[in-house]
Length: 241
Ligand code: GLY
Ligand code: MN
Image (cartoon, rainbow, N blue to C red):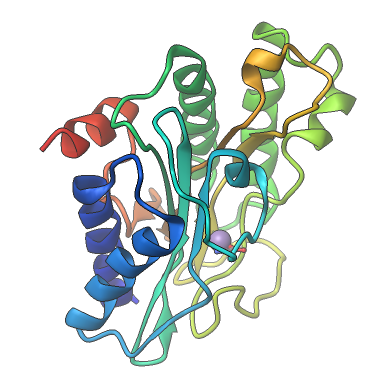
């Protein structure tokens, strides 16, 4: 699993170096899958999700036909499969190389939620603990940004769970009871503000997900995908290279 995840992080980094406006989503897919294959990964663990612009708000988007323009965010959700085990790492990056202030506000909120979620990953915690922590951060942040007024409105913008088991399958089998040392789970909160949403249109089309693969231990969580830049300024710095 460590090797599958490392290859996947390399692919995200290569995409950050190469991404630019006028690239198509299928070309970004080609960049990441080239890295998979040249590093010995036999397969993709699941069809590569390369969602740009409005497609950043579409869960499990795999059509990958858009031509990206400056101002688009790209949600890149990918996993190399190596010797039977799969990774699952998502990074969100601006096609232009720089987040707009509004994109950055959403990005930083998802990152803060993910940090809160990762901090809950340890043996003995409930499987839902990372989700509940991430959810609470996003509720507060979305209220502060005046995108929602009530917690009940958040389901429209954050409509999936934060974690799943990872291993031989991308959504691997597991007990979904209390977390056990030796398991690997994802922590992947997101915010998706589709066009037409009942909020200020300035937010429309912003979709952000950040996903890492976390090893459960009796002590602190181990982020197995930490080598792929995650902070906005780190993403921008690599894209500038
Ligand atoms: N990587 C896709 C998913 O977790 O559903
Ligand atoms: Mn996932």
